[in-house]
Image (cartoon, rainbow, N blue to C red; front, side, top):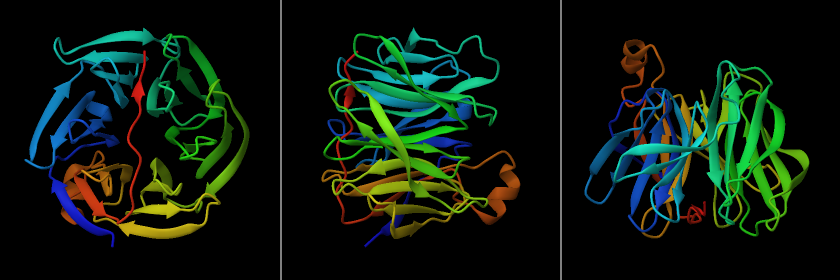
Length: 289
């Protein structure tokens, strides 16, 4: 199948962090460099933009008590839709120059994971924020912390370091949140394309957005390429399963800085797309803090 549709023209400079809310039947995503996020109701086409006041907004997740959890250049925070304000819960790198949070996700035990990037240096860190608001440093030496997800049986955590051209797999302990035994699951070509955000489907396969690659790639749990979904935009940034049956893959893209030049050859760059894959995804967990 993999029938591709253009969902909405939005011209995001750096659209990222696709997230589906089952109860609302709505798609969320961020525009990192504008510090804002969007909510789209595909059934009606209605969409909203929310400006957080942050300089950058890397990722967001659903929150069980209402609102969202998210990570900005400052740290991890929660968003209140009524007051439209952020309340910061943790700022572990506020004194580190040029550090900002990038991608992340909520695990099925309600913990929020998010990692940092520091101008491409191998100094990024992956953090875990637990429901009791305790913060844990889980991985270091990362060039650009990116897509993260868990296998359906909750035994494996997948985590992307974009400049390393790798999606790592870790043994995951759901009870404690510990990770161990890092190994390379997917190694992409060391060229101008790098792995970005990811989604895990109900069959345990990994869908990895490819920055600079014009596509999303699906890999089996052993890292073997199973299929590709081609897009009319070079910088494909993230993906998430949505729709009433969770069998539609929503995909974000980036427009980059040189807008006029990019738009001349990629008129839909920065927009949102949907692929009807015939494969179901998993519902997004909610942060319990």
